[in-house]
Length: 139
Image (cartoon, rainbow, N blue to C red; front, side, top):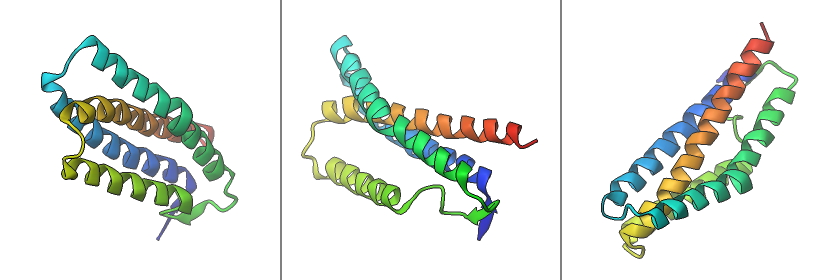
């Protein structure tokens, strides 16, 4: 199944937004008893770390790759490369395992997931914004 290459950016945006909202929702639900300035600052630190060290770079790298495709029609799963799918699978498995194992207290889930989820949502918004920019350029 193939789609226009610019739609790969939109698809990446939808995937990252869905993942981000889910992770952020879990973090916010866990936060109910732990809202303090220190915890909010720690969540912000997690956000900045993941956005600037991981997801911001990922958005730029994948957007550049997708835009450079020569053929207009691309396989629907080419919004990521193999390495990124493996990283995503690892993160999902590790995150689910971490939560269900009970090894981490709710305060960790609240702080970490809120920061991580916010960074994932921003990645989804960035991919969606890149889709809109590319669509406007191609008119």
